[in-house]
Image 1 (tube, rainbow, N blue to C red):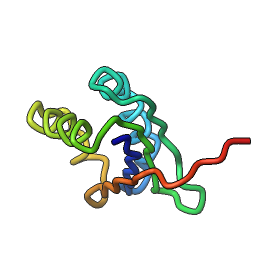
Image 2: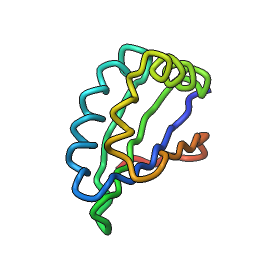
Image 3: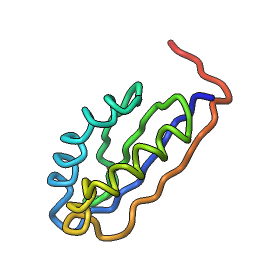
Image 4: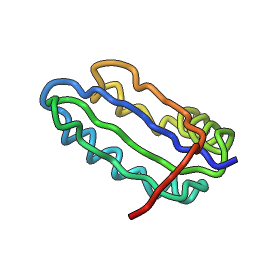
Length: 99
């Protein structure tokens, strides 16, 4: 079943743009692993918030991608960029209306 994945990040002070750059740099890997769409957003009301919104065929496909990335050490830069562990939410579609 298609799934929307929302990942919330809190960067270390002064590192938000570095975090955005890092996340932007790994988007091709997510697309190659089966992600249909991925977007990185800066949270307006904070100096350190970043949200990534991804669309995958399934939760399992996303979890497999994350597991492989962790195993390969691809997320090691998070140690220098994040003030707290990232949080993942998996959302099932309920209704969508386009303009």
